[in-house]
Length: 258
Image (cartoon, rainbow, N blue to C red; front, top):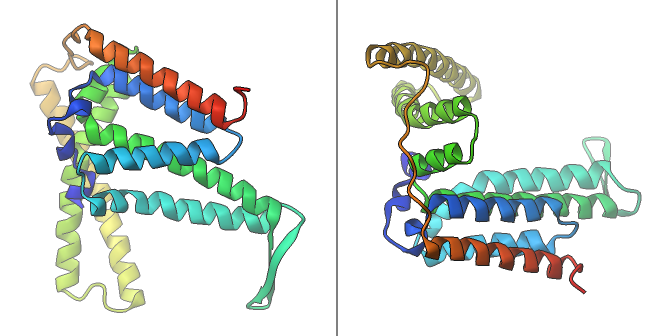
């Protein structure tokens, strides 16, 4: 679980990790904007394919990439099923399930596939960005772009302590498992509820301790950040060329270029 959320791969030395985080942020936002504005599945799926290809080209473990995509893929499946059942008129499949008539419709299926392609495209971009940019550089870049300081500081603290909460969750779950806490459905549900309650209580305790520690270290209502260096010429060129390529691909694949 810790390996799944760790940004250890962002500290590797390659052309993408060396690029200025502001340039990568601009490229990521441009790609996500194109995905959101697309009216077909071609552009989102193309972005998703390039994102996955870029991650694999950096020699990232395919198992890690697949694990990070598991939850979004589950969301895509749910979206497709719900849209196919509740939207549209043209029936393509119908069957009875526990006395309930379930009908899949063509219009809803295409609508769900479009929404799912956008989810995959956006998630692949964010995964690529997080795997080539350390978290502290992302927060610094957001401040440079004048994001509200309070939001950025809260995000920093959340990122800092989520790993501590994961450790506590793993310890409690291991203790429950040793005591046969997950033997049977009823006992498993009870143990899971106790685990969730323990994590919530631990998060409140951690928040109180963290605030006290920050006050003792001179916290005055904001976390100081140093200035960011001037973006290099090569990074500006890569940002501009990448944005131009994304715009051209969007116009071409959406059928608006000609």
